[in-house]
Length: 341
Image (cartoon, rainbow, N blue to C red; front, side):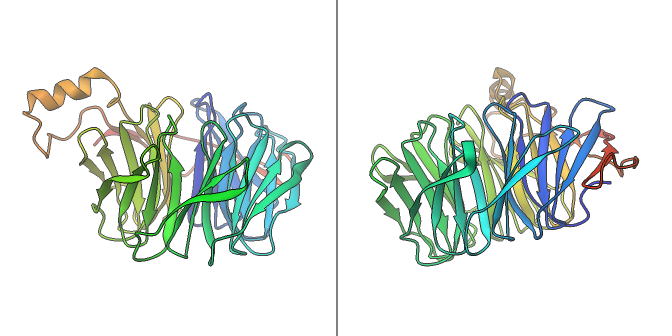
């Protein structure tokens, strides 16, 4: 069926036709989002999959794992993969550069490493974190890397000089996730202290701070327009923030446990969430269009608008199992249930 344990990571393909998800059950699933199209399940990692990302071309999927390795998969029926040992401890995240030529990994060995995708060659290591590194991401132009970890810091690195050029240390507990917005002008980071912070990199100032969850934030994703952000928390909710107005607009209750991953599609029309309940939920959005602003104006921009008619939920039921095509892949179909929130 779907995953048999907590879903830890998810990412959409660039054309939004596939969704990749990784799990504590050690499997990678590629959901083919066309109706009545089978999903692919791949095995290869020896421990929990911690991170997943499609390459910018969509031809590769990278996964990181607590087994200390990174794998590069072809998201097809065959699901061939290459593996390389990346770190001396659990690898917590993996991400492509926007030109698709490099990978950045973050690890419990306190290091960040940069690799060439071709040949999986090690390039260099960044070593100033003093505890586990939870997440590392390239800026859209590839000139910077942002990282965060259990030393309660968010660090910014220059990829040409290989030096840490900034360090933000405003967190009470560990920092769980970090990413750049689409334009590369800001970074956001989330914390186990349930806060989400956004810094403007042009001024190096904290410009927004949100404390909207009742437990730690595990993940977030910027909408491609940079006007919205979704966050997932151990309080079992997904929340949608309007970054232009600086406020919470929706709280979504779809999961029966901690939400560990959220991801917008590249167009922002849908987003996915996954968590400890083993579910992968897909949510449809229209708030990047004028209709959303019109709805707010009609309601006087009140802080609790009527239940949104433009959010709907797509939730895979228990899929029908097919015979695996090979020893490493189990093929299943994906059914959808639609309902308005």
